[in-house]
Structure formats: structure tokens, C-alpha cells
Image 1 (cartoon, rainbow, N blue to C red):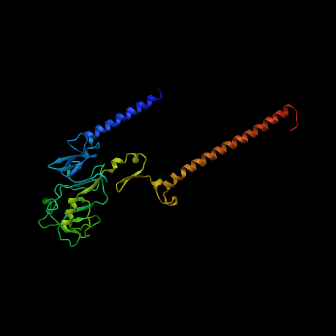
Image 2: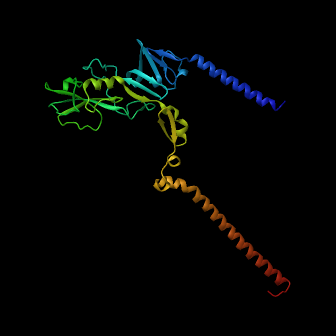
Image 3: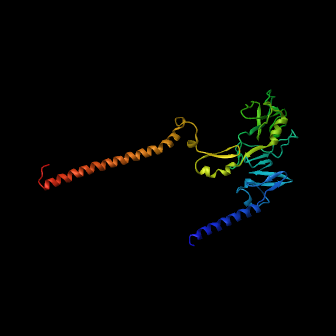
Length: 297
């Protein structure tokens, strides 16, 4: 009977936890805003805080059937959420693919998002600039002026460029940089409509890092491969041969052997000293015994 008590207690604990999990699922059904489904790790402001990840960045607003994503003091429109690949696409509120004279409200650096969200490497910068002289380059696409009107002369030439690594002409001033999820299936020489189409598709942000706790605690490199979150340790998961790895990985590999051989050598040395001491002691004892009995050595 005594042996059955722990089993009964474990069963009751399991049923209690399972019941609480079911209650939590009942209290946190998927909500919607427009045509978007909102579920964990996101939640609407009207949902209990326990229904979303414990960070204000995952709290979304629904205004006139439009989902709003807030980061710092900025508010973006949510175009799509894909829960299978841990991605959300957000758009500057002033960008409209049907209005090619609109200017983005916000200017973003690559690392301007929260520490939890990660900007996908396929995102591309879109630069709005103005020049005091015309620029003859297919990379410079004529666009509306999106700079400060009080600081420019009467004769200006406004352009937009998509992509990085493009040299800025000496006669040009950068007004703002926004991000898009990049061109999809069009030529390398973009049009204004194509660039605004990319901006309207939004910038892709990933939240997979909230699932990297265990990996980070084990000093692993947490990454996303398709829809699978991976945790790799540089030395253990490196596919290159040991001779091609750096000193740190080689030291990590050989350290157990060095310690093992060192302990073995140290133990052998201690054993050898004990053996020599034992032999010396025995010789001394035998010598003393012979002297006491007047026996020849």
C-alpha cells in the first residue's frame, strides 16, 4: 500500500497539470483581425496577457480590421504571419503600391527591431535620396522627394535605390532607408512600381529566437533551417576534419586526452615512487634484522 501512494500522487499531479493546460487552451483560443489569425506567441490587446509570449513586442492591435505591430514608438501594418516558419511581415503605414508618390514614415537601420525579432538575411534596404545634379544610372530610379524640404534647394532630383553595395553619388544626400523582403522574380534593374510592390510586401521578421533558450544555455549556435530550429555546437557539429578546425576546437577535442594521459602519468609516477620507497624500506628492514641477529649481509 505504501508503494502505491507515490504513484497516486504522481497521477493526481499529472491530471492537475493537464487540466490547467486544457483550461489555458480554452481561455486562449485563436483570435483574428481582418484576414489574419492571431495565436501564440502573439496576442491581441483584448486577450489576456497569458495568451501570448511575455514581451510587449508580441502584443498586436486591431484597428478597423487592420493588425498593428508596435516596435518602440513606431507602428507598422501586419501583412502576413506564418507560424510554421516563425515569420511576420510588417509594412510602413504610408506605403501603398497603388500610390507611387507616397513616402515611408519611418527610417530603419538593419538592427532597429527589438532584440527578440531577427531580420531575415533576404531583406534588402531601399534608399530614398535626393541629388543636386541628375544621375545617369539604371540603379537610380526617379521617385518622389522624401527628404526635408527646408534643407534643399529649388532644383533637386529625387531617386530611390534597392539593394546594398551601391555607391552614392557625391551630389546626392541620403534621406531615409527602409527595408523590404526583396525583389521576387524580376530584373536587376527595378522600376518604381516594382520597388513599391516590394515595400508593400513588407519586411520579414522572425521570432524563432524565443525558442533558443536551451541552446543558448549550452553555448550552442541557434539557427533556423526552413521550418526547423537547429542548435549547433561549433566543435561538435563541424563537418570539417579536425586538422581544418581552429585552435579552440582542437584544444577542446584534445583536452580530455591530455588530462587523461596527464592523470595516468601522474598516477604512474606516484606508483613508481611508492614501489621504490617500498623496496628501499624492505632492504632497510632486512638489513636491520640481519644486524640484530649478527648475520652476514
